[in-house]
Length: 114
Image (cartoon, rainbow, N blue to C red; front, side):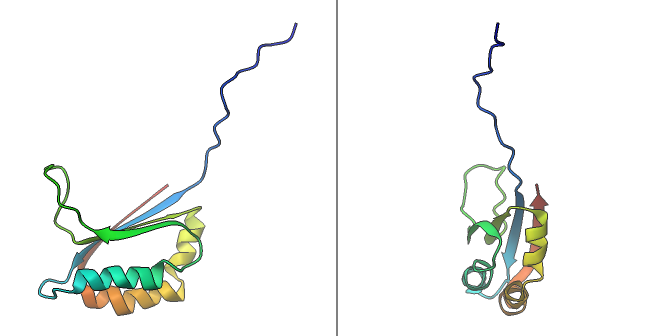
């Protein structure tokens, strides 16, 4: 007699590393948020190793649990932490820090997780 087979599909665990960056644009610089957005798209999006890239402005919400104090958020997903580590030292990332981040940002918070 043959043993019954489990009909449930086998779920494959995929490795993923998320890099979330929250930016507070420079106070008194009205175009700072737009410059952060443009800089992220220009310098960060082309960096190899990004599985998914999303950058945008904070969306107002009626829900009090939603933080609405920042202006721009960035979410990049990588296949591995190593890919994210390589991204951090990539020349385009360093150029973003100098040309977009420093002139346009008062504060930043980063959340990295697997």
